Image (cartoon, rainbow over all chains, first blue to last red; front, side, top):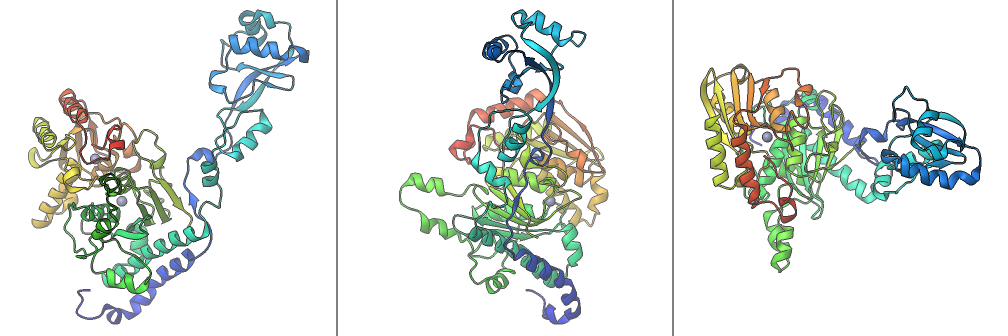
Length: 362
Length: 159
Ligand SMILES: [Zn+2]
Ligand SMILES: [Zn+2]
């Protein structure tokens, strides 16, 4: 705090109204409602269907040999998740599978002549295009057509609304409160307009969940330096805890990832909060060199990142480069958010690292 | 671009991902840099970001409005800028970006078209001395990134 006069006094009126909005957020964050994972759009959208030709078998006794023959002559390839038969209906092929000047009767007669008299009639039907990934999709899919399902317990939990157990949820919500307290502190002490902050700026808290301590945090500086979004500063502050870093800053001498100006306020506001000291690593070294190497921090590997607002494209990609494990944010960034609003970077399969994203704090 | 390639080989010599970058302003070289991720332990210190920081500093020291300044900046970089750097360059409204080889893993055009998210876009072109740029990358990935944990080494790391 470098102000000669305590800013609280000087801007008393301004402070009350400008920090009020943060108090409101902090109150709302303090709930027991579970967080939501931001997942692929597939999970929200209705089941995708594909049109296929179906043949209705005259005699049930012919079913098994029909299936064998069809699997041999017209395998379903991309529709392996579907059972070929449902009661007396058998999937023949997708409707765009053969030249459409041919009728389905002609197609069957020419490609599987053995089956030409098996069917009573042909029809078109819509069946699920993709294998169901979650139980809800499976339930929906099997009402339309019988299909195979390999349940993924983790994914089912992730799409559900009870992902985090209560104690863990409290922790995530506490760190999000820290993000808002940091914003509040800078609003008061750096005279930043709170509305501007909530629309344009950000705060970032990086936590090591194994040590349950804050490794690094940062407030936005893009008004002074257009690259210094709080995420970029936080990543650099993490680098400082690993004897690196590129930007000069006024970090605390013991808690290298934390700006020294905010530390006393956070310690007072959250007495139980732990901060990461570099000697944590030395203390927790357990002897064998192999274990040490596993423990040595590398970028943001294993770290959770809590942010006031959904990060922009630059910052989101920076978090991919940094290999963050999970990203939590409170406020959607409709204009340029890259984890939910404009795109979902975490869903781009060709990237080399993927983190989980959670929101739903308010 | 030849100068950028020299910078990239300098990166290779100090075991950084070999990407080099030159910024010009009205035809004059005003900034040059290379990747410095490993030395800084900061995965965002790409060649482009280093050049950007250098020029922002320069503008500040000389009381130049950086928004005006970057409008006349051309960027030459040996590898297609990643999603992060593309966003940064769009944000700063640079005039043009010319790159060597495409970036299949992280490219701000190849992997995700970052220009979709920004109103102002720069002119983008590639394939300038691409083979030379690619050769450097291949040399790097033949060795290993000394800072990455074993399991991560096999996948290509950041450029
Ligand atoms: Zn950002
Ligand atoms: Zn980059």
